[in-house]
Picture 1: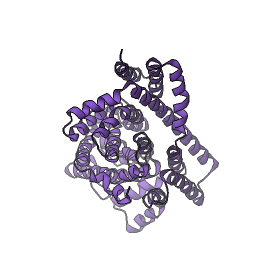
Picture 2: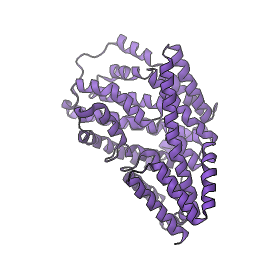
Picture 3: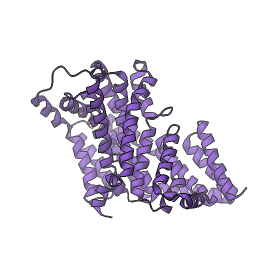
Picture 4: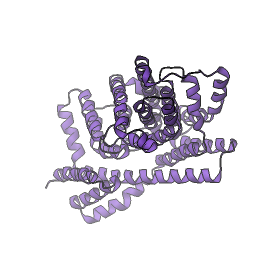
Length: 436
């Protein structure tokens, strides 16, 4: 077999192992080590296994990952996010589908504090779904809005996936994080518009609140949500102002979360212990998969596959838009079967050389990739956010009902993706203001 054939065979073996439910990190790393041994020698494979994981884990920018995870975990376990939904409900409850709209925007706020889609869906599901079901909201709408709005955690900074994409694509992480703000807000706005329109046309989906809240109650609720804007400003403000690097901004966010929790008298030993353990577990899981992806990148590079595909793409792709659409179809298909982190780290070694060969803006591409990973969280059969919500509601709302409700949000995502592809400046406007 030629090196190129070995590369394609190895990539096929990875997909087979993942289909057999072998952990993604094991599949990526195991196939890569064997492939390097075949292409070079067993000693070269052992050398790569000894050197590459350390080189990756020692990357300074990766320090942002545990810091962002700790910030979100502290915010959740000390109850900072609990007031978000109540305030959003009081201010937006008068709209058609007001509770669902409130859930959508509260999830956007929670996403800005956690950086995790599944954590956002889990937290908002516990807060919002019981209240919507008590208000006689259609179960598909009540559950789907939580699953869909939870995906904002992958885009609105701080985003763990954006940090990892920046490291693998060798792009400025600060620009990538800022680039996610406008697309994230656009997603929340399109979701809200779709919910309002549906509930206005079919009021039975979401009965109106009987008594609108008074201004005194609204203002009192608003005063309780100040910790989240402070966290957002601490992270995004320090990034946008050039005061801190992404790693330093993550540390500022984690420190601010701990300080606010202590100021509010909520920083107990149990809460801090739970937050630290959650951050450690999340970091270990992310690093394990990412190290497998680093080994896969080395294996594919040795096989010559990225260069072959880049040359092939450059020879027929007259219009870069066709390349973006082709990559979109790949992400949409694989997103039905793979978790977001594994999907991103599996595809980047193959697709990035193609994008680079066509001189596409990799910050814009990063936003598109993260958006497609979000969509993968909603599509069956492995829509992780749908399963998170299903675990919260149990038998009260069947899983097929949740997926049917998500069809409306997937239709909204089609509109959002068309806008982001047609108008790259939606993603690049804010980062360009920062300068390069």
